[in-house]
Every structure is written in C-alpha cells, then in structure tokens.
Image (tube, rainbow, N blue to C red; front, top):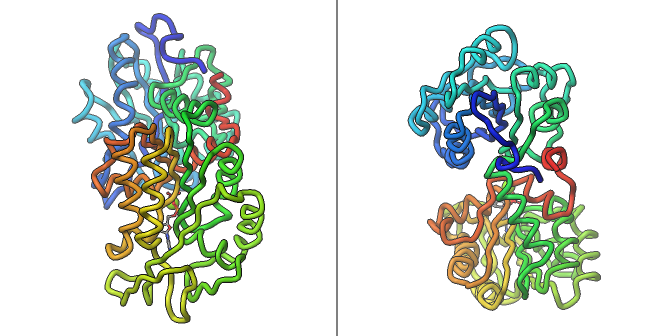
Length: 388
Ligand code: ADP
Ligand code: MG
C-alpha cells in the first residue's frame, strides 16, 4: 500500500483527502468527535509538508440530495478548533465556486468540501463525478477507513484518475494492524464473535474457525446455536436464518467453539425488567437471554488472559441495558488486562469499550465497523485495493 511517505514533495500541491467525518449529531451538536480527531495526524502532516489540503467526507444518508440537516457545517466548526488553520467550508462538493476556493488555497491551508453524498454520483461511483473531484487535485489521499469497503466516487473512482495516491496514516494503521493479526497472529489467537445476528457475522466466524485457536460466541448470536442443539430459547432474539448457519459452524468448529454455559435472562428488553441467572442454556417460556452468565464470562476472560492475540467483534449481551452489561464488561476488562495484542472492531463493541472507559488500554480500536468486519472476513476493500 502506498503511504504518505511515498508521495514526495508536497509543497504547494493540492491534496484531496477522503476522511470519515460521519460523526453522530444531535441537531447541530457533535456528540462524539472521535472520527474527526482520528483524521488529525494525516491533516497535520500534510499541512506541515506545505500541502493545500482539501478534505471531503460523507455524513449520514442524504441520498444524493442537498439536505441542510446533513451539512458538514458542524464538522467545519469543530475542525476549526482542532486544526491550526482557518478551515473554510465549501458551499458544494464540486463546481465553479469550489474550484475558485481551491485555487485560493495557500500552502498549509485547509478547505472542507460539502457532504459528498449531496451528489447522486457518489454512491453510484459515477465516473463524471470522480473526474470532477480528480480535477480539484494533484494528489489523492484516502484516510477514511470506515468507508473503504465501499466503491464510491470519493473512495474508489477518483483514485483511478489522480496520478499520485496514498493511504493516510489512519487507514494505513487500520489495514496494517488488522492484516498483521490475521496473517501471522501471536498464538493462541482468541476470536470473540458476538452481537445480534449470525448472518451478519458468518463471514468472520467462518474465517476465525479456520485461523483462530478459540472462537468465543456471545450476544444474541448464541441462540441460533442453542436452537440448533435442541435447547429452548424462550423469547430470546433468535434469528431463524441463523440456525442452519450455526449448525454448520458447530460441525466445522468442534472444540474451537466456546459457547456460553450459563445465561442472564430478563422478561423483556428493558433496563428495569425482572432478571434471573440460569445455570445451563435452556431459556424458560416468557424469558429472554440478554447476556452471558458469570461462569461463561469468566471462562472467556481466562482464555483472553492466556492469549497471544485477541480479536473481538460484537458484544456479549445487550450491554446498553445496565443489568445486562456484565458479560461485555468482563470481556472488556480481560482485554484491558491481558498481555495479548487486542484488536476491537465493530460499531457496538467499540462503543461498549469506550463506554467502560477502556478504549486506550486496547492495542487497536478500529474506527470502521463494516470495513473492519469485511477485512477480517478476508474480503478485498475497494478503497484499499486501489491504493496498492
Ligand atoms: P457490532 O456493532 O459490534 O458488530 P452488532 O451490531 O452485531 O455488534 O450487535 C450489537 C447489538 O446486539 C447491540 O445493540 C446489543 O444490544 C445486541 N445484543 C447483544 N446481545 C443480545 C441479546 N442477548 N439479546 C438481544 N440483543 C442483543
Ligand atoms: Mg452494530
């Protein structure tokens, strides 16, 4: 993969940088600026090299229309506080006004284009939009790992049309870290696959059944496994289409698969519901399994502490509800304490680790849920491939 260091002298060069500024918003207030801060090392390095920095990102799903509630204006305001430059927001993605603003940029200055998804050609990877974007720049850098699994005009199309291209520092770190742990993991490699649906995770599950030493299953994903084994699942979230997939994984996984042996149940999906812990995995009628039980969490923690590498995707239970956060928290604490390399990917698992205040005790916390999942599955990411 080509990196910033391969780009040569950047003084006075127009560098178009795809970043992932798809931040959560409450009205015009950014509730978590992690993604903006994650892009700062690349922006700063380019500024210091004397480049004229043009940033572009998507935000939400405006579906190819200009919708003010999806404007990047709040992001531009936050960037102004974080970057040593007066960051201007362009009124559009491409067009004459944008060109004029780009022409007016001085060395080390920063311009943010409007939400690329205001353009209908973005998600269709329209060659004309890609060309208009390419015309703005001498150099293209992709630092939007969270969007690298999409072949869009700003992540893929444009990269074919600019001569000098490279991965930004964030994208480079994400790809190198995830690829290294998959290609040559320090053993034992423990994979934890949780979350809501087997069908979402069957790709990673399959891959880890090939390469990991232990595969711990958590979350509502457990119930298709238990159903396949003939247990009662009560009113637990149990994806029907997941049952045959779980059966296949059971056949393939053998001793590698670590399923829960006890469960934390609730009467409903609510924080104030009646709860009970059961030894065993049969869920009585009228109850739902909302977290793994303490024995199962402890077993997972033991494996994590004895591991050489840990990859975790998907929470152990409905951690958003305080009575059912314990399993996920025990796993997160074990990941924080272990000497193993720990990589956390997946939107909700990352949110859990952040919520417990343990993110900075992990080796790597991925900024891209879908992208890290696809990379772990062994899929080719179009936004990365084009930079090789
Ligand atoms: P990630 O984003 O980390 O890949 P997923 O999106 O697959 O994870 O799953 C996260 C969701 O799964 C959370 O919203 C959580 O509440 C839900 N979940 C986990 N365990 C259960 C369970 N036992 N019953 C219902 N929902 C669950
Ligand atoms: Mg999720």
